[in-house]
Length: 334
Ligand SMILES: Cc1ncc(C[n+]2csc(CCOP(=O)(O)OP(=O)(O)O)c2C)c(N)n1
Ligand SMILES: [Mg+2]
Image (cartoon, rainbow, N blue to C red):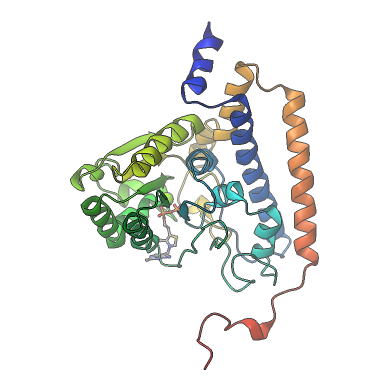
């Protein structure tokens, strides 16, 4: 009976068993790539790491709705779970991390986390927090003016909603009923500043003031995120306008490899959230529904780890970007 009830949950969402396996695969792969990134940092091979760990359900559940190369993604620096799902590779991730010439995002010239891919319609983020929002609404306006059915997914952390860009974009999207989905990955911290000292009231509730729906959801439940995002994508595609989703989650790692989080949060708090780890939670759900046993889990993990090891090795041996390439794409050729 219990199995039937939870089963009907994903069946009601129109997801097949294969979909569930892919959701699991993409979350686990993003985690393993991220873990490897920290090792490369500690080995002195990657200067800077910024993590998706803990936010995989929010990222994979939302991005699973994107049609690669058709819809547009404006990710923020933690969204490797999204870019990997869309078709970027662990190799590309490590090449970028180590500043190698073959880095698909920028040829080794940008900081890690600035994802960019023309073929996949992933638009690079600028370094100032929040500037992606008005850019994303511009693309959504273009879709509308061209009468195309594309949807724009734009993402950021909870602190990015404290800046003007976010509000301007929300207002603009509301006025023009734009096909855009705002995903706020509320991970409780902005570097060392807790959300309580950074965000007034409810983020999700702010959408009402801009004339469209906002939903606060459990961002560590991949099916809940998928469901909210699917509804938002359908709304956007059918011309009904934007949706805001606030996915409540938690940043398991420090802000970045340059930050010592023992200075501003208790270890117990992290341990409490580790119990709500989105991947372990989904694995439990799959196991309870007879869709994953230990052997299958280990086989998938072994496959991912082999890919990650090969990718990391490849990137390690790849040549660095040429120093003379540093200004490519920065100034016009005269
Ligand atoms: C305009 C601006 N202010 C400050 C920074 C420095 N900064 C980089 S990331 C970050 C934290 C943003 O927190 P949040 O939006 O919650 O995202 P999270 O890193 O928690 O995922 C800050 C303050 C910046 N890049 N741009
Ligand atoms: Mg945050």
